[in-house]
Amino acid sequence: MSKLKIIDTIKRSFNLLKKDSTFIVLFIPPAIFSLLYQRITNYLSNLMFMQAFFLDGHLLPPVLPVLLLILAFIIGFFFKVWALAGAILKVTELEKGGKLGLKEALTKGLRKVPKLLVPAIISSAVFFLIGASLATVVTNYPLLLLGTEPSVIVLRVAIGCLFVIGLYVLIRLYLYSPACVLENNFGLKTSWKLTKGNWWKLLAIFLIFWVMSRLFSAAWIIGLFLSGVIVGPFTAAAMTLIYLQLKEAESSKEEHKESL
Image (cartoon, rainbow, N blue to C red; front, side):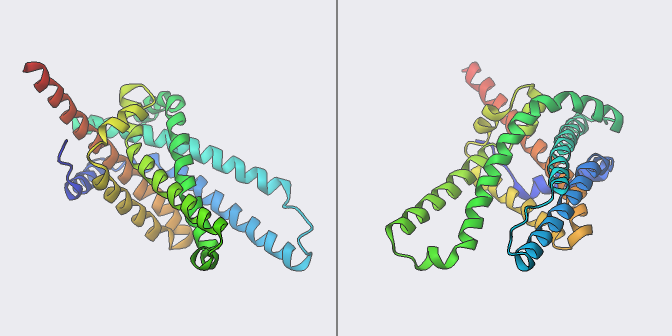
């Protein structure tokens, strides 16, 4: 088990961003599409509210905004994965003492996108399940808190299990992206192996970046954009550093076993 240091990892990630500020450029496109997605979502939400209030909810949302919403999500997700791949390659090169240019990072990162999309979709699905379980609790709080019917009790247990299992799996897959990019596989198995024994520390790091993202996003439009271009590269740098550290520890352990 490697002694993963939370504060040290955060500091090293910040220092890497200071060394190479082009990290931010990688995450500008996904931040723009994330902002566009949010704007369309707000528009549709307001439109549906107005329809429900004035027209008894008989009208469906217009097709064009819905299509634009789906398109913004897909393109934004693609750019996010591409930025993540480029950032991982830049961090790895910086750790070797070199420096990968923006154009080269984008070119090499693009080659990694097709394979990286698979674990990225899986991880996003797990994150969505966690969010859905929390949303269900918030939406049905009085019922879940006060209800004593068997069906309500079963629902409580199901939501609790969904949240706990989802969170556990999400953290165990936390290092899928650097593993996928640097090992040229899907990275899920490697992440599961490397995160063993470090779950609580990785959870703490995950929560730090999640809170940072929520704080930025609270500032509405500009905050959502800043969350993408600051927290995004910061998180990518930290994940890559953690992966490199745990991978090195694993290699040293295996070498020690072979020498015995």
